[in-house]
Length: 448
Image 1 (tube, rainbow, N blue to C red):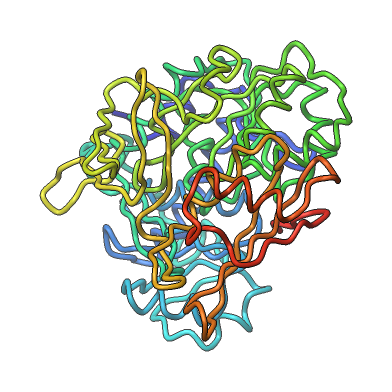
Image 2: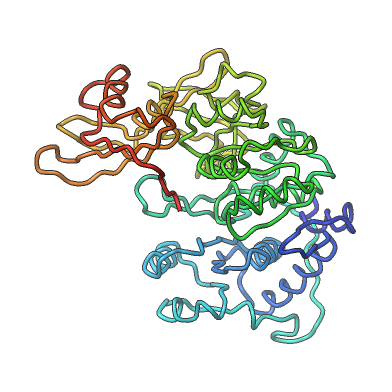
């Protein structure tokens, strides 16, 4: 198949690909911008299939360098913009990343990094290293080749590298298209970090399906509501973002052109979902992870309101089974293992009922409290089903009596709800050992 930017340059030429800070970039303009950066990278003589770190702040720079890398058969890896120097150093060392594209404002942060070749995006130009014309391969000949590498911390905060292939991304776009049915007239708001698969996947979908992406540096509820009221049709959010968006909207209805909010991530409270239903918010609830190249199940909430606690039905060509309630996923979107198998044994615990997938918790977020193995996500999932609980944060710390003491910070909609009410509710659903030792009702939980 043709490289994404080659194909979109031919098919969608003069359509808007990206809107960013009141500037529009067409698919053709983006193509030429990427080719310019590709010539610069080509002149750096980076060996084929090398891993190239991208440590930049400007989302347009990130996206252009990302596509330049895959145009040159290099493997990009986008670092979080707020990664610590020590963790950046460790990741570069552990995964043998010998090339880093960064920016002048990060000079102090990267100066101590032991890296062979560190280049600043401001210093790259098409004439770097010479002005001879450079031709790029226009096709992707091996869809099983690695397109990009991604860091995922899971529950240990130790970065794990996930390598996703071209086929993973192409298959993911196809599966999502069957669910959402993308249109050339769509305008998709992208406010999630580009180092997260959910954020990057929006850009890949836009390239393949030819719709416009409204790129934002960060989540801003008032700005997003402005974009929605002025033509945006889709957006992907995590639950805390959805709550802030609805709060900012103050009950005003969404315009008829707005097609939906794709909600992912853990911690979808039943109360938040009921609020969305009550306000006729078009919610598509989904489930996925980095290893599955974004979502592999989902559903439109208003079509199945009785399944509000579910994460939906499996996508077409996806197989989900359980082994002792542990989810096993087989899908063309799953990052292949060393033998090339697209099967993932997850850390998620759940069950399937009436073809809908329900999550219980995780087997890798277990702490030992009072001599018992306690799943933190299981506690959260139970709390999020309470009709008056809007948000939850669990904190743990070492304690001489318990080993690990669990504190639950809880945001509620009813001021009459007290800590002992929450404790009683937990004991109706879990054992006494699974009840947090400390429960605090708070006005607001800040996830920033």
